[in-house]
Amino acid sequence: MDGFDHIVVGAGAAGCVLANRLTDDPGTRVLLLEAGGWDRSPYVRVPKAFSRLMDDPRTAWHYPATVGPGRQETWQRGRMVGGSTSVNGMIWSRGAARDWDALAPLGWGWSTMRPVFQRLEDHPLGPAPHRGVGGPLRLSVATGTDPLAEEMLATGEELGLRRVDDLDADDDERIGYPTATIHRGQRVSAAHAFLRPVRRRPNLTVVVDAVVLRVLVEGGRAVGVRVARRGREVEHRAAGEVILAAGALATPQLLQVSGIGPADTLRAAGVPVLLDRPRVGAGLREHRSIALQYRLAEPGGHNARLAGPLGQARATLRWLLTRGGPLALPVLDVAAHLKSRPDLDRPDGHLLMAPFSAAPPRPGRALELEREPGVMCLGTVTRPDGEGHLTVTDADPRTPPAIEANYLATERDRRVAVDLFRRMREFFATGPIAKRLHAETVPGAATHTDEEIVEAAVARGYCGYHAIGTCAMGADDDHVVDAELRVRGVDGLRVVDASVLPAMVSGWTSAPVTAVAWRAADLITGRATT
Image (cartoon, rainbow, N blue to C red; front, side, top):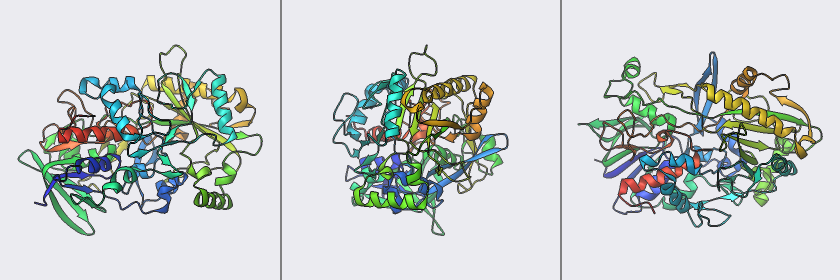
């Protein structure tokens, strides 16, 4: 016995929050295991350097994913302390109250989650019924980032979108600068917000470069984990719980290689079946971002400042001296929530826009910019209902699982995507921004029909990096975890990460996962959510 009460697998958003909150009690001993290393890369604190981190296999996991017949792409996830919050686009979005309220029967409604976000946040716009100040996570809203961004905002207003300071204040059509996990020009990862402040607590042990091979189950109870580290295999045991916080891809993979998953899949991979649980790895939902790009009629935007070595050097020097400039910004400058059709009662799509344009994607590369000036817009079906799945192909978790994305797999998702794309084109044909454009470059003016738009979304779009649902919570025994995130059929085993969310909560996933982990700590310790 190691002397640990809890073992937490994964030091991403959820793991860092759990390590922080579970060790509030000096009598609770926690082991935090991370398969990657420490977040020592200098690029971690530079917001716009995220693509360097995502492209590097030393700082990001590269999962092959099938997106259609004969088509594959790479899904990157953070491979270091801080997890994907150390490499992501840094947009902080709580999700819509109405979507949280769909989880109210499970105890995860907005009335429960709203105070959690208030406890988490240190928001620059000050206190409000839906946001907080004084919390451990310092946020910012970068305004006036570029004249083109201001023209995008003015265009949105001309089309009837309401310009707002806080995009999460309500759930009607709106446009504004996104809230970001950036403070004074530097990324605020989960590691910086939650783990580093408690790193020296004597009841917290953090071990990096530790690949968990399987969960140890004895007599129907999870008692620990087997870990490979630096050429050796060791076992760590817990008197309380094993908590999987490895994310929507690694957590279902670890459950499956531990013998908990679809029986036929496990047998085919050479894994002894402990529990036949068909929904482990099923129910995967992921955003597909449809790309729309234009060439500018005149010089402008970020391309000239960030695409070439000289511009990058100047931007880097500016960031080092002032913590300002384009490198201090989140992934994209402007965000909007809008309806794909006017008769809807709420937005079903969201946009991210920026005064730069992406070069043609290359395998394993996250984002590279064109040399010529351009603008970019990514449109996403906010709440997709199409489901993919993840299955292991080998008993060793170091072998990547098979991932089927099933983007836009339903008629409803395709309809929303097509209608949203047409609204995107309408946006850039309107007002101030239209006067700045020369021609559409992606997917190109020849893309007209519904079928062509869907094909462009799949062939030339982007993964949203927002996978959820692979260990979804639910009220009946078919669901992998119960309302308190305990794995059904195994005592002492809990899942706390994006995999437990049964549906998207209107936007980006970093904030919801952080809040889920905060509340999970209350459930684990028996404290009331305050």
